[in-house]
Structures are given as C-alpha cells and as structure tokens.
Length: 476
Image (tube, rainbow, N blue to C red; front, side):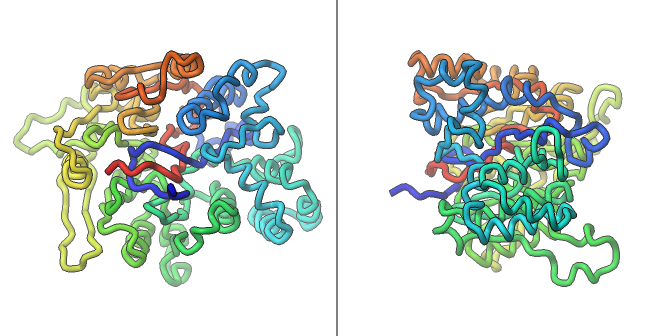
C-alpha cells in the first residue's frame, strides 16, 4: 500500500499536496499595509483567481486527480457556476483528496467542539478581539467559521481582523521530509495566525492521525527572551521556502531574510536526533528582500538540471580576473555553504559555490550519470537575470521529473529552457489537449508549463511556494 505521506525529493512524481486558494482577504489588502503583510503591491482578486490561480488548480487536478475534472471543464467554466468548483465553502467544490485545500481541512477540524473553542480563543487572543466577538465566532457554522478565520471578514464588507494573504504560500508553514512533518516558524508577525492554524490542522485532522509521533516543531533557544536585545533577534525562525528535500538522506536549509541561524541550528538538531536524514547542508544567502528564500534563487528541474540565479550560484571571480563592468553587470553575491553530518566522526564540508553543491547532489545523492546543467534566470543576461528572478523565474514546482510550472512573464528564462532542449507550453493549451485526449499525462516530458502571472507575481512567490507536497514517488 502506498504511504499517505512521504517526500524524499524535489522531483519525484507529485501525488498529493496541500494548497490554499486565494480567499477574499487578498482583495482587502490596502497599499499602506501591503509590505507589512509581505506583498509588493495590491492585487486584483478576480483576475488573480479566474485568470491565474484557477489554471493552477485545474492543471494539478489533471495530473493528480483527473477523475475530479476530466470531462467537466465546460460545466465548471460556465458563468452560472461562478467558480463554485474552486470555492472551498461551496457545495460544488471539488474536494479532492490529492489536491487538498487548507480551508476544507480547517472546516473539518472545527466540527469538533473542543478544537473550535480552543482555536477561536487562540485566534481572538492573537488578534485582540473582545470577549463578545469570541463568543459570537464560537457559535458559527464550521464552514463559515473557517472562511472568517482565514479571510478576517464576517462578510464582504465587515472585517474583524487583518487578512492573512500569504497563506497561499503553504510551503512556508510546513514541509514533509520522508515520513516526518516539520512545522515551521515564520519570521514575520503577519504570519502568526497562519502558523497557528496549520499546527491545529496537522495535530487534529484525521488525515494526519497516523503521523502524530513524526510531527516536529522548531523550538526557540532556551530562555531566548532573557537575552539582551530585541526578542526577534534571538528567535529561531524557519520558513519552508528555505528547506529542500533533495534526497532521502539529504536536506538543504537556507539562512536568509526569513530563516535565522538559530532556526537552522534547531532544525539540524531535530533532524539528527530523530534520524530524519544523515546530512544537512546550510546555504547562507544575502538577507535581502530580492532573495527572501533559497527557493527564490534555485529549484530543481531534473536530477541533473537546476534553474538558478547565476550571480549567487557561480563561484566568486578570482582577483586576477578582469573586474566586472559596473554599468553592465550585477554585483557577485555568492552563497556561503557548509554541510553537516549526523555521523559525528565526519567533519563538516564546505562548498565554494552553489553550482558545485548542486552538481554534487546530482552526481552523488541522485546518481546522475549525465552532466549537471544549469538553466539561468534571464538566460544569465543582465538586467534580465535580476528582473526575472524578482518575478520567480527560479521558483518552479516539479509535477514530475523534467515537468515544471513557471510564470509566463519571464521571457529570457523561457528562452534558456528552449536552448536546453525543453518544450515550453501554455497552461491553457495543455489543459485543452488533456481534456480532448489529444495529449496524455505520460506524454508530457521535459516541459516548462507556463501559467499567467500578472497578479500572482505581485505577491513575490512562485509555484514552489504555493505548494506543500505531502506525497511524491520515490525517484530511486
């Protein structure tokens, strides 16, 4: 019998994942609060849903749970349906058990009186609600209550607390490593409610009942609150965009703007104590808004192919080489990399560049016999490399080895894929061909599937961010 939860690579065929479809809270982000809530701009919710995110869900269903959508496309897209197929609180919602919606899981656990009472109290404490509002929420229907907790709105016009628009980036809140579940600790206060909701789901929903002993939580350093300086400086923070499961015995952790050295250290101790993996590689990248997480500067395409930002991934130029032309080339910002082992007799190993680390993973962890190749953001041409990295050219989700999802706006990166022999296809065309049986899933290989991204890219996250894989096939 196939396991319910197991992820031991970034590229094994995806079988099950956790997502959150954009809720009404995204449509209530105001310019003055956008950056506090970690968005670069306000979004047009209707375009983001119908014109962009819905394509993502359709494609996931065709790949992971075709019976939910095959033959139903014309009915789903009729004006009369008004997106009911995509709305977790609607009767016509797809409710796939492979493309799993956070809001549905939340509504499920709110059926339990004790969970509902405790979670409402916790949310109201975080948001500073009064007691009468807490009592009112406790009496709400679970489906309606789940919507309120996620969107912050009693209805379309009455907000009672802030939205949590970043919940569409489900990977940041948890990650599956083999048969373990790591619950992360986001760095920003704007994500506190999200983190708590995910803890309640993982510890209370029936689909995770067999994994209670393998759920790991990142602790803060002992008595961090007594140490000098602001509390935030001493906290252990870790987000899923900084964690990659590259093989069954190897995890990468980024130290970034969002993941602290304390967080990385606590995660390593957990992994080795519970024998999750045998080695962990820490990748320290510049703590810049441009980069945010390691999955904004590289993701895996095939066992021997990686999408990367060259200015961070390539070795630092030697002092003997010609200096970079300030007016045409970006500053080199090489990552610092060190690998640790559960076997204490082995000394930590340093890698001089990200490319050399990724090559080592391809050859030695994944037993690739082909030359390791790199597809560069912006085709490694300045300023397109920096522009397209900002709009998630390196933040790709593998549906299976060699088949990845990306944004249609990154023209130079798309050209780089073509030059490496990949096909490039628009998502609408792929869906049409799958629906008409012109194309079959098994026929799609070495392909970059492009999804529209005018509004999604304003939130600074790609499809790697918008997925929490729960089950992948073993690529070995």
